[in-house]
Each structure stands twice: as structure tokens, then as C-alpha cells.
Image 1 (cartoon, rainbow, N blue to C red):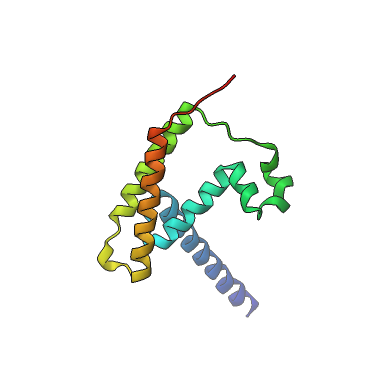
Image 2: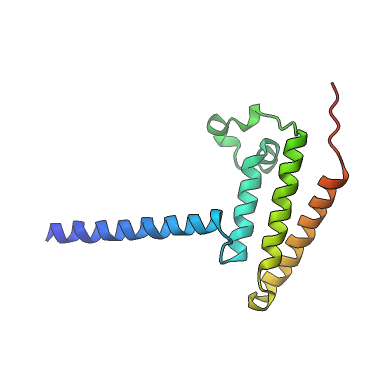
Length: 134
């Protein structure tokens, strides 16, 4: 009896791990099925990428011992700028690839706001160069 319970729990655990891994792979390596999940992932990645953003939000302050974000400062370089431009162009393509007919009214509005914001960020990155003062 306990052998059957352990076997069932093992199967459930393996199934859960496979489904979780599939979701993570879909979220990070492909275009996610849900635009909401994609935007949430982008927000989290942007927060983790910037020590200033993590401090500004404040939710990571109690984890400073782990993240060490309070002791870091982002000083962007030209290669960082080019990488940001490439990421913004990719984000814009992904956002525009979601079929507007399959989205709810709220998702349509969210999509338009995200596209507008991404275009503005892209314009700013391309228009304003980095000034380095020594």
C-alpha cells in the first residue's frame, strides 16, 4: 500500500517537474503562448538586470545579502546600449506577432501600451548616445 502511494507521488512529482520545465522553456526560449506571461517575464528580467531598479522597487532590499544589488552600480557601455537596442527590437517583434483577434479587450490595450513603451525606449536608446566623463 505505501509502495503504491510512493509510486503515485513519484509519478505526480515527475509530471509536475516535466510540466514546469516545459513552461520555463516556453517562457524563456520561445514566444510564450500568453502575452501576459511574456510581459511579466520581461518585467522580472528587467528588474533583476538593473541594481538601481531593484533598489527603486524596494522589494529586494531585504535580500541584499543575497543579491548584493545595493553595492552595484550600472554604468552602461556602448556594447550595453547595442545589446539593449537588439533586445528592444526583439521585444517589439514578439509583441507585434501576437494576433490581436485572439486577445481580450484588456490584453489589446496592454499590447498597445507595451508596443508604445517599447518604441519609445527604442527611440531613446537610438537617439541619445552614452556620454562617458572621466
